[in-house]
Amino acid sequence: MTDLTKLTLAEARDGLKSKDFTSVELTQAHIEAIEAGNAGLNVYVLPTPEFALEQARASDKRLAKKSKAGDLEGLPLGIKDLFCTQGIRTTACSNILDDFKPAYESTVTQNLWTAGAVMLGKLNNDEFAMGSSNETSAFGPVVNPWRREGKTDKLVPGGSSGGSSAAVAADLCLAATATDTGGSIRQPAALTGTVGIKPTYGRCSRWGIVAFASSLDQAGPITKTVRDAALMLKVMAGHDPKDSTSVDAEVPDYEANLEDGVKGLRVGVPKEYRIDGMSQEAAKLWDQGIAWLKDAGATIHEISLPHTKYALPAYYIIAPAEASSNLARYDGVRYGLRKPGKDLIDTYEETRAAGFGAEVKRRVLIGTYVLSAGYYDAYYLKAQKVRTLIKGDFDKAWDKVDVVLTPTTPSPAFAFGEKTGDPLQMYLEDIFTVTVNMAGLPGISVPAGLSSEGTPLGLQLIGKPFDEATLLRAAQSIEDAAGRFHAPDRWWI
Image (cartoon, rainbow, N blue to C red; front, side, top):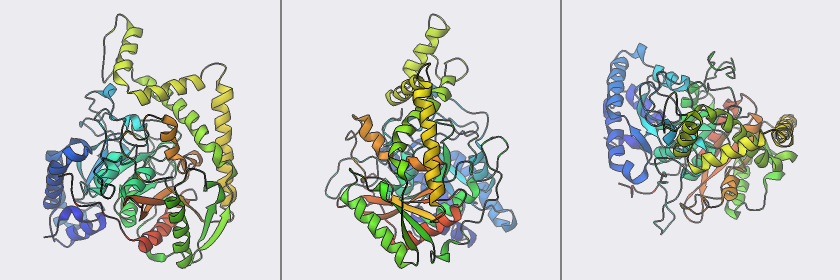
């Protein structure tokens, strides 16, 4: 039997249907891979092997009665530790949540279990999803399974969904859930040679996901292929009355039209994205992506998104402002960590000082400042006006194009500590991705090449609201041209 962990989600689904193996065998193979490799990569903060095997046994029974099998029946997945899982520890990788076990299940994960999926465990992420390298987690950094050619220094897997991207790249799950507030699905996907799609805001329910910035957060999958992303998104998405921002719109069968090609598709290339600081390799790959889509029958159009240059500073006002509001609920009284003080205020201060990491504290302070009296109009209100202008740029572009093509990141994966000492350098990692969140649009990163160091680079496609189907079709065209990129031999075992 082939190594079952090397299968894609679609291949594993087809193998289970044709009875080439069972869900228990598939799940056991991944459990063994996690036991062998997790110490080296630190992707799982809580493996759940017994729970996974229990789910797998139930799946095998349903697979035996074909009529009862779900769309993801028997397929083992990893779950980012931002998704609440009933009775299973959920911490957002922060000390402040301590040993919190939710009494409820997030809507997205419930959708997965209803479809028959199996949970291998909870995946590492930047604390409260605040970071671009997965170095801010209370459980320690995640290691990228990719290495620079001829070197052994440890590289970051991107963030905040670094555990998800590294686990998928290292074959420690078939696919994983992730969240994206300013690039936290697409950026780690680009740095690990995986596919990551951030759906339109409102496409997936946010209920039961630990909040970072409520007007920007959106759940999505990280997978090995575009087809796998289509499979995962179909199940994860859907209207949820428990989430007031969830949109009541039909979820298409994303997989059905993947092979339709891009003939006649209008692809926009924004001139403002050719910035100083972008590596020559990223620029060259962008040109290659344009050529691939053109060869496949798409037409290429230069467009202007003039307010792009204001996106990053506006994002780093809005996101911390919403974070400071959301994180006020962690007070050491109702759940999570508690550090007793001499009075209530002292308890708050002691608990938050011990519970929050440095990056979270930095963003809470920024957010509290921009929302404070005298500064709200000067900063937060102005940033929201800029956000409206950014959305307006895209609205005008959709008159001329169907999708937009850009690089995902300005450079390939970097080593631990290379950028963490300079928050500004770290924030620039999101320069190509934040506009998508600010405008509430769908975006996908597809692996498209390797850097001169032998590490992955990704291309980003941005789509019209709720038009993930076209986005996935265009992504499939790039994947067909570029091929897939596999991490090196399993040096982490």
